[in-house]
Length: 394
Ligand SMILES: *[C@@H]1O[C@H](CO)[C@@H](O)[C@H](O)[C@H]1NC(C)=O
Ligand SMILES: *[C@@H]1O[C@H](CO)[C@@H](O)[C@H](O)[C@H]1NC(C)=O
Ligand SMILES: *[C@@H]1O[C@H](CO)[C@@H](O)[C@H](O)[C@H]1NC(C)=O
Ligand SMILES: *[C@@H]1O[C@H](CO)[C@@H](O)[C@H](O)[C@H]1NC(C)=O
Ligand SMILES: *[C@@H]1O[C@H](CO)[C@@H](O)[C@H](O)[C@H]1NC(C)=O
Ligand SMILES: *[C@@H]1O[C@H](CO)[C@@H](O)[C@H](O)[C@H]1NC(C)=O
Image (cartoon, rainbow, N blue to C red; front, top):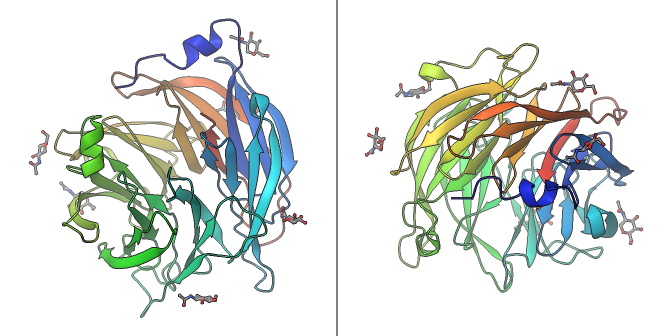
């Protein structure tokens, strides 16, 4: 689908710039990294002014990025969503901010004329989703969705309350989904693109104790019209608490809500075997007809954890393909570059970003291409520590 080597040859042909990456760290920093094909360097590291910067949403067209704040320990203090503009060579300038509910763990752009008119935030701790009109300027929320739970789930210490863990937009741009780890639900909202208002649709119920964390859409072939109609689209969900990946067919009844129907449950391990004790699924990504998950604390490549590759069939079913090293500990975050020839992996407790080569034809993840350590002091007792996010700025 994507021509092999399309990104790095022009970039690394001897002349121009390296690829820019950004990494967020719970010590309170946003880090700018550069990768030139052989080595990864730290260009800058700055304090965001937040308690726990927890995620990065990159807006390539708008040359901006957004960082939510997971601050949750002090009920009296709020969390702050910040925006930066991205200048020449990837340099960052702080722009706006908004006070949000606590426990921000993920953001996504949605709505407006170009899909970038508004931003939604998943708040794990506060059991809420909040939305803001862009650009941010000391903004008040446009809307706050509050979730409630009737009773604890199968994993009472993690499912004592709703825990929205991500917000993502479907390929048509008309629906915003919210995997909710605490409720074993995927909330579905219809987007009013003009006003940014979300209208709640009936949620999809996962199996009991699934613990949905993150999800990614796949659409058959690259045809724009098929993506626009949504035909054949599948949602793949990384279920943290059950260490499973579920496939859901996506349908769009005329004039109605997006609907999900679960079709498959598999584990990240060969032969559908169970995860080692203590392991938990992290991130999930689709590239072409390949799906990947990161497997935290599974120690499959001692001392490191792992990533799983799954092949996606034409009908949208997945099959386990390979398990490879994450070259770090607790790979909470990873992202493939657009050309698909490299994967950046963020090791949370190893405080590193590892870049691994990828074969664009087979989807196989190969050897380590570069590695860097990004450390910082922990921001206080009880707070999470380490590097939580890495993204390519493309
Ligand atoms: C990448 O950077 C490293 C370290 O600065 C340097 O040794 C190497 O020659 C560079 N590689 C390319 C392809 O520019
Ligand atoms: C938010 O914006 C206000 C006003 O511009 C500024 O004083 C404050 O430092 C900003 N906070 C953060 C965390 O960026
Ligand atoms: C959600 O809760 C917040 C308080 O945390 C409140 O301001 C808001 O009105 C609530 N939203 C709805 C739709 O009830
Ligand atoms: C794979 O494992 C999952 C989780 O244990 C189970 O629900 C599913 O039925 C298994 N699938 C097959 C094909 O055995
Ligand atoms: C989807 O395709 C795969 C691989 O060709 C096949 O094994 C599976 O049975 C198919 N599933 C359905 C529901 O047709
Ligand atoms: C990455 O580099 C750090 C030192 O900078 C080292 O401690 C760590 O073991 C390296 N990781 C890998 C996977 O090579």
